Amino acid sequence: MQALRPILLAGLGGFIGSAGLIGGWAHGLMPLTTFPVGTLVVNVSGCFLIGLLGGLVETRQLLGPDLRVFLLIGVLGGFTTFSSFAYETLALTRDAEFSRALLNIGAQVVLGLGAAWLGYAWMRA
Image (tube, rainbow, N blue to C red; front, side, top):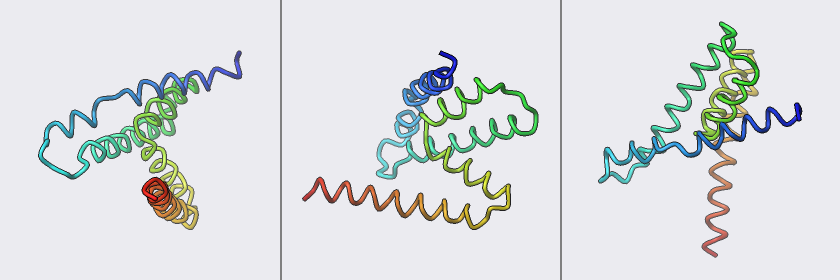
C-alpha cells in the first residue's frame, strides 16, 4: 500500500486541479473575446504557483514529500501541465543545463503544436 501512496496523492490532487473553474471564470470576464483568456490565465497562474511552491520546497523545505506530490504533481499538474513544463525548464536552467532547457522548450512547443495539428488534420480527413 505504501507504494501506491504517491500515485493516490497525485491522482487526488489531479482531480482537484482538473476540476478548477478558474479558466471559465476568467473567460467569463471577457465573454466577447475570441482570445483564449481562460487558458492563458490558467497557464500563467499555474506557472506562478508552481514556481512559488517549488521555491518554498527548495529554499525552506516547508512541504513534506507527500504534500509535494499532492500539490506540485497532482493539483498543479491537473490544473495545467504547462506549469510542470515551465518548472522543469526552470530547473534545467538553474542547473546550468541550458542546451537541455532549450531542447525542452523547442520539443514541447514544436512537438506539441505538431501533434495537435496532426490529430486535428487526421480527424478532418
